[in-house]
Every structure is written in structure tokens, then in C-alpha cells.
Image 1 (cartoon, rainbow, N blue to C red):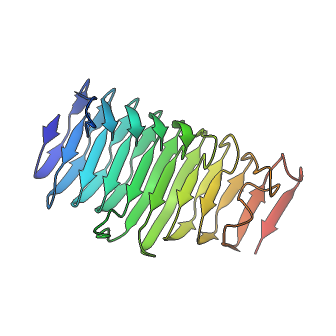
Image 2 (cartoon, rainbow, N blue to C red):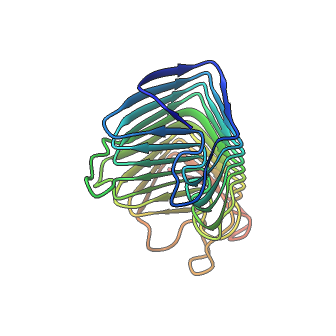
Image 3 (spheres, helix red, strand yellow):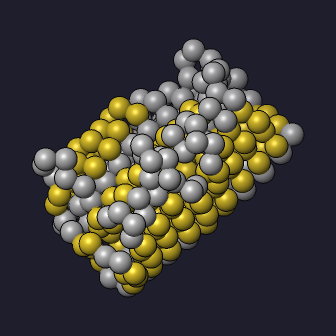
Length: 239
């Protein structure tokens, strides 16, 4: 496990193990009040109880041109676990991470509620798996701060609930993005969702609502293409 302040650039972090006793950050642990840039890295095959690949607490982290794949968590955040922190991910891939909850990425405001927002751009979140909830990316208690996706692919993630996205107490804005083929019930769960110029395609539906988003979610569509074969077996262009 690496503890760092500054920048990590151009190598592979693998086979780290922080499992046992609520261990955090199998590959990288970022502690309180730190700032870290991860650039041109491969973070793979690491294990922890929380944050199999990366764990961030009360810090600022940017992830650029980096692959986070094949990491495992025994509790939360197979790929990345971020709490009370600012997170900016660009031109990166979060692939095939596994956890009990929140297979790909989980962002939590923490008791301090210091998260300044989450920006995810030009990236993909694919083939992540949670055995309980939150397959792709999940965010909690961000106190209505912005949670913004631009040009993001979220596909083939799995979880019994929230297979693609979970977003509570945050303003989730999805722009110019594609959300496809995420499996099991309720691909997207959230308290306030805005989907703009995006494709939401062939995600499995919520049984209670017959839609890929549960009926209790507040959703606004702007110029989106939506198709759910399980619900209506037809295309809808939503303006």
C-alpha cells in the first residue's frame, strides 16, 4: 500500500492487500488533508475491506489516464472509495472491480460533509459487480453538491439494485453520456437526476415501476434517447 502526497505517474500498483480489521486502500491510501494526482497508472488486483483499489479520506484527488481494474473489496468500493473528499476523474477506466456493496466507485460526504463535488469526464465504468447494491458508481450525502458526468460510458455493471448509478442528496447531471446494458433491477437510483444529450439503452427495469429508474426518483430528461426492452420494447426520444 502506498501513502503519498503529490503525484504518482507512469507505473503499475498490484497485489496490495489491506484486508482484515476494516483495512482501507489495497492499492493506494490517501489520508486526511492530502492532495494526490494519479496519472498514467494501472491499479489492479488489490484487496481491502474498503476501497480495494483506492481509498481517499478528507482529501483532494485527481485521476487521469488511469486504469483501475480487477480490484476487490470485502465491504464497500471495489475500485475506489472516497469519503469527505473532492474527486476528479478524467480519461480513465474503472473495470471489473468487485465488492459486497458499490463495486466500481463509491463517494460519501462523510460526517464532515466536506466533499466539494465529483466530476467524471471522458471515462468508462464497465463490468463492475456488487453482490448487494451499487454496481457502477454510487454517491451519498453530498448535500446537494454537483455530481457531474460528461462523455462517460457506464455499461455492463451488475448489482441487485442500482446496477449503473446511485445518487442520494446530490444533484446528478449526466451530459453527453451513454448508459447501456446494466443488469438487474433499477439501473439508476437517485433523488435528483438530470440527463442531457445522453443515451440510456437496454438497462433492466425496476419491477415496481416498469422502468429502469424507480418511480420515487426525480428525473428530468433533455434531448435523450431512451430504450428499455423489458418495459415497452420501443424507442423513446425525450426532449
